[in-house]
Length: 341
Length: 246
Image (cartoon, rainbow over all chains, first blue to last red; front, side, top):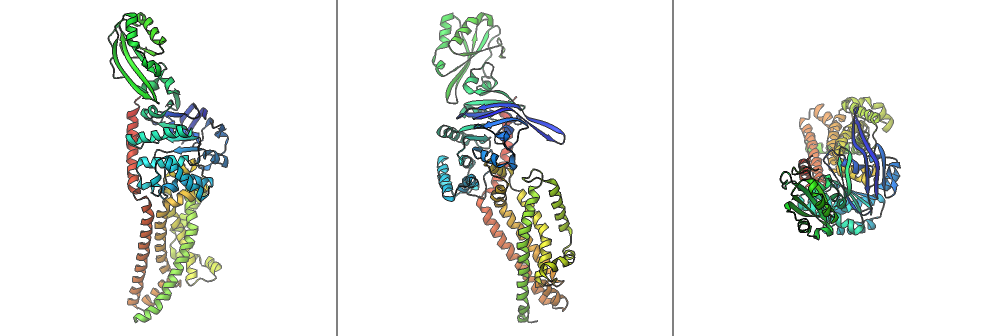
């Protein structure tokens, strides 16, 4: 649904050059929620603004729903007609909501419909539908100044959906909200994604956002995508940085010197198997469990366990093979010092 | 002078002042508003960014603002004559009043429009709106309370200038004050005229304040949210540091 190829954005100001995006390849499939995570300055904001051409990339291409936007003339506030038409099919939600204070909630939602040129009755009907969808039917006549942050973001989402977009861009939509409101807004995005088949590309600096709503994620650093993929795949990838961030086990013990420490990740079906006792019985070894946790990540049960086996790595090759055969993902940590081998 | 005699002179002169200021206000808004918008739009980062044009408009506005009104009035005599056919009376005075007020109002418009949050423009562009949509649906409605205040300030300045125009035959209350109060030593009458001007200005300000308050009430907690917003941004940045230590 959204594909960027070798996207580069260089800002030039007073002879200085700042590379905000450095060859970003991103592939967001239709109907998924895709999260881009990174610290401030990683380039994620520039990336999302490039997707609807609020920023024109220095080079590279952006294809949204089969249309290469980089071929359309204009940028930001000087968009050509074709680009403006293309933007109507891409909804955008902002961190600070960006609602017009001079308009009521309903009038705010009607704004994109006015731009499209719908008549008054059609606008009313559509706005009422959208307000219902985001659960604010009773606030149609309120002004944004009278709403809470969460309510404002609901209005922002309703407005973004007014043009029946196939793609919704969310620029830190929950970063100005408290944790509880964040959860309800994320749940709303998830519902919309499922009900309407909406493709959502969101950027955030909070791992929790990725964990609770995303199907896929990308980690950005210094203008580059360091890692990307489906969450379930990432969790099954050895040494995945994102997986580690999503599911940190840092607090656990590191075992004794001379022993082998394993990190075992299991998801879905494999989580039902009593593999620890099977391992102990089959190979007659004593297994020391250093720590374990189970979490729900994008609707799936994922567990991770850190265990200690007696003896150095070479002595444990067979038991490790056994675990891998069970469909478990096994990361061998450097003997007893906690770092990855 | 008796009160009756004063009244006979006062009301026609008041009517003249109102006509003069009224015509000048309408003309100033019609010409000054687009000029003020252009100052913002042609500036760096604006929708119609064009720095040479911006510099030229800025320079013209600055020159217009620095010319003393009394000089402007004399300097514009030929122009006024060609436009309204005379150089005396309220119709003639309205011309330099307008020319003098346009740059003043344009700067006030510029300041008001700049106050509009850039995020709102971004939102409109993301919806597929163009420059014209941004002006009509965002810039003007969102800055309306400030624009009304600016227009009021301009009207009150125009009333002051109109009294000055009276000294050179511009008609209205200014002429009355000079002819009677100054030249005929009718000090009481002069104070009556001054008092009337004070009352007019106060009434205009009251009406304007009322309108501005009504407009601003639409986002009744607008002020507080703006404060909260900036504080929240700071917190968010701190959280950002905490959330992903690298």
